[in-house]
Structures are given as C-alpha cells and as structure tokens.
Image 1 (cartoon, helix red, strand yellow):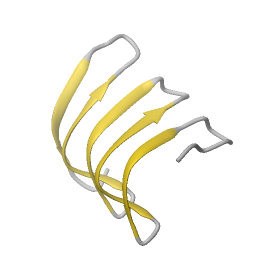
Image 2 (cartoon, rainbow, N blue to C red):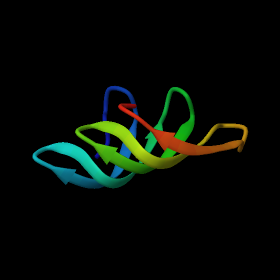
Image 3 (cartoon, rainbow, N blue to C red):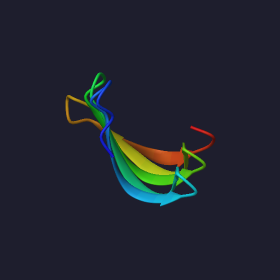
Image 4 (cartoon, rainbow, N blue to C red):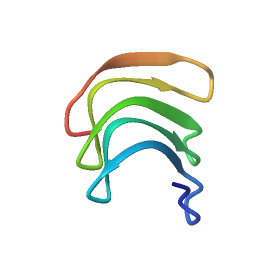
Length: 64
C-alpha cells in the first residue's frame, strides 16, 4: 500500500482492511522504517525502528 498523500509505504498483512500481523512501514516524512507486528492498524508487539541516521531501536510496542 502506498499513501499518495503522504508518501508512506506499507508492505505486510491485512485483515478486514486494517494492518494486522507482520508488516513493514516506511514513514516518508520522518524517513523512518518500522518492521514488526501490527494489530488493528497499530504497532503492537515486537518490532524495530530504523531512523534516517541508521540508528536501530527495538522493543515491545503497545497500541502504537
């Protein structure tokens, strides 16, 4: 999924039209990548963020 208004890109699993399961989201404005688990369109569970400087943060996400 590519959001033409923001430039954000999501590659992953959907359920009932919402991001659910494993997925990767690139946030164009922040130049940041999230790779991890999703539930009901929110980051939920294990995941990692790579920022534009290449710094990696990982952990457990709760309700985004």
